[in-house]
Length: 287
Figure 1 (spheres, helix red, strand yellow):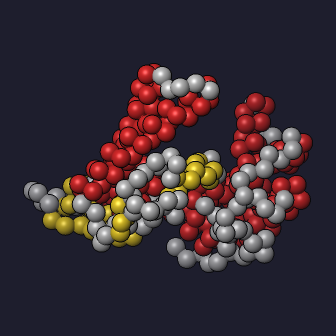
Figure 2 (cartoon, one colour):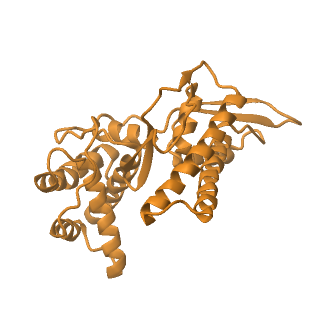
Figure 3 (cartoon, rainbow, N blue to C red):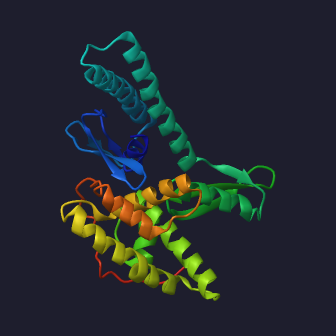
């Protein structure tokens, strides 16, 4: 919810009624993403004032706290208790704190020594880890010969765009991060196994042909056409990780697929319009 509200505010959207009831939560790889589903009270502006953002946060804390307390009471089939409200308020305030940390990271202006490329790279990596791609970097004169460093970022689609550029697959951001890690690991294994360098184009092409598509084809027969097949693939990778942890070493993808199918291939949510084409080809290897 914190990331969702940051994205809305950066786009000039004042929500006005941020609550659990007005938010859709959906699994995205190993994350949970939030989406606005009721914009009846929303307003759009060129830019929001600090006061508008703060009021949205106040509404969020109040509404989310009441929503969480109600959920806790529903789970016990009893009226909310004072402890329910206290815990719910703490949780709701943690969303507010997450919002502030993320907003500060996105809008911070740092001062650095001229030519300190490491500091620039460190800031970019932190933003990439949050899922943001860098739009532009601004350097302005600062105090005592230093430079003021400001970064403009795009929306939280960094890994999704990278995955689509390399493979042609369209996925949610959390899913794309998992798939990109899987692709990189397979390319690294190919280089070790074949004792030769594998460029990014060949790595993406072979990962699609030798790993992703065969696995998707096996899962599709069980998961069904109405479910999110990419999330199912991500679930297999998570299943593989857990089994490997228990075994004390890598069990391999084949064993993970068999185990996942044996437990009934727990179907993920129905997928949105973001679907992966089995015939997709890598786009280009432009930097």
